[in-house]
Image 1 (cartoon, helix red, strand yellow):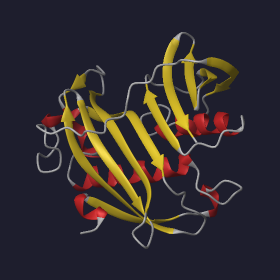
Image 2: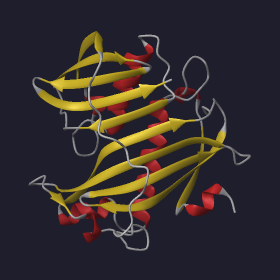
Image 3: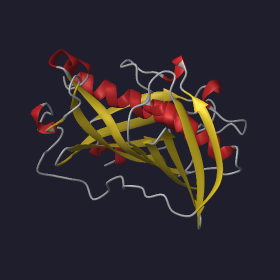
Length: 239
């Protein structure tokens, strides 16, 4: 039995020239694009995806933990897998796996999601819409993305403005745009992340000015994002 057999949905991808860093290895942002795409394809295939908008419900990514064992490179053909991994209170969990053509593990990731009412933004119980065969509400994974706390020494700060290209279908900043901001600040400060944990704290909209600060603690780098006094993101990375 292969590693992918324990997952529920799979898609092939090929790494494009526009998805890699100058060293030819895929960016974390592009990896997150793949994960977002397969998550939506899986949800749509089982009627708990975009169709929920008709009931004024939407999925919001709360936390994402990406662990790269070996970076896919330009032109490489890969296979991405995903599966529901149960629920815990208001959180639904989704796991990801990326393999190369020989079945070698390249990337593992775990995510937690909230189901929100589109108008009130109040969380809903995920089992209301999740098919039990895919997300068993009585089960929860041992691996859950952690809550991040900012500790250590602040070493850098910058401010950026939310642009139109940052927005998603809901006119909020796409979760992969947050990762792009984090990846840029890390790499421009000579840190090459192989692991990234991100907590999505609040939404950003067009025109928001986001203050990003970079912190160091032992072998970890942490990033905090604020809009005014509102906390919008926390990230922790290891190389």
